[in-house]
Length: 376
Image (cartoon, rainbow, N blue to C red; front, side, top):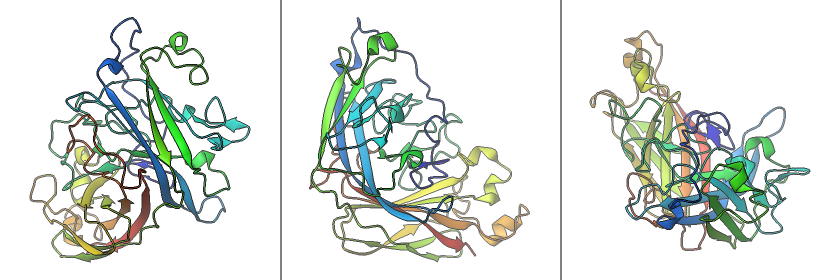
């Protein structure tokens, strides 16, 4: 996954910075001779299959992929993030290959390590927190970012300028620059996440090849089925003509959560007011926790603009008032999951160990980019 408001294995081009492209906000290492976060925090880890289409690029055709979905929580008893910095590493089954030979991602062929460099495992997902409540995320790596009405709005808020929204908590591996020709990289077995609460090379030693430093935490996730969820279909958008509308989305059997995530260049109020541009776009999110199968209707209110009564999506008339021709392009992602992706996210969840697997014991996710054309 990757992007500005997000970056993903396809082009989360509007949802977060790519790995290595953002500041982490780390606050230094935890001395091993003091009480480490692991004395109070609890680590959870879940894995599953991520189904999505890698868009055509550099002459290569579009490709349906099934890669590894990674979900974690590291929280104190009150639900806040259990650490502000740590060094995570994932070790997969012996048959898992974490990268392209001979340049594996980790120290061993089945380890994911460099992918997480400078991006700790925190309260929900991998990336740096601005606040201790698991809340504002800085341009986090490989995460989708949710917006109103499902998540709180950041417009006219007290969040710092680097705040882009609340993360959806999952990351997909391998990243775009490591994807092999094999479009099904997930294997069955147990995957282990270990978090070392230090960034000091001497304290880390040869981690993750050798034992993790004292005070580290480990949690496991298991994959027993590599089929994954079906690829979502594009929603049908019906505008209401005054800045909102409704999305008709098909929810297949096995899906328990659906998110319609809009990334729009709302020029009627971003052209002249940069605080509302966020990481390159305005983000809105609609959520359904009704399982499939069946077609569901998700309604986008018309007045979610930054003043509370401005149109959610700029109409042609709205844009014309700031010298822009045409209405706002309506597009983004349909994200579907078989685990409580939404309920486990901040600020909804403040429990120490929210549920991050579905009935199968996995955390499967599928997503599709879509465009519904310009708003009238």
